[in-house]
Image 1 (tube, rainbow, N blue to C red):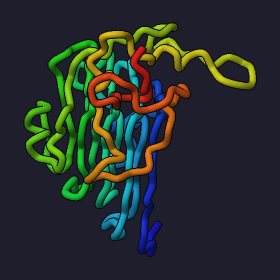
Image 2: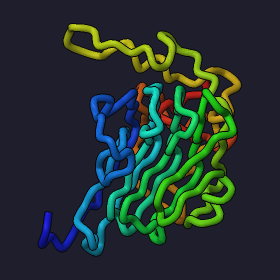
Image 3: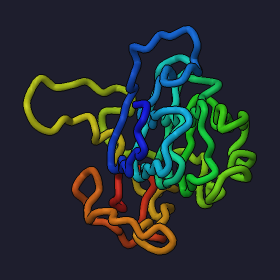
Length: 233
């Protein structure tokens, strides 16, 4: 990627990820590009300017028994963008690294209305190398643009089946049954907790439906959810 003068803009939205990159057994859990993670933003170091990325309304889940798992990895890029309305869930790790940032500066990226859930240890929170490590949501929020406004560590209260973490691929063409596991149940704190990214100061073109085909926004609280499910059940 050397010599590139631009990177992006890239948008990742309305996705469901379960145990992505599970086959990675690299000894160094935080080597650039090596952490187990759902999405990775990777570019040359130093990064090209501009380099933009927007990740919003995704649901990430990992029950891999390792401290290497992360919802997102930022490796040099982007220099500007947004990470918002994402639901990051860990189960089985006592030292979960929700976000991993090797060689990355978060100065131009806003973090807003995300859910960071460790089902095995509800108070555990870790962000690695942004620069520095953060062991609490409050300390991380104080260090980044957007201040993680609206973000929480509350349990998601899923209502679908099969249970999260039990996905298998059905040997047939067409929609898979597994994503139903990540539908938010009635009373979930993430329904209506999200930020309206179509409004100022973000003014993104965010689409009219969620991952499941539900019309968005819904009519609960802000009307915008955290995660890939946009309905109000």
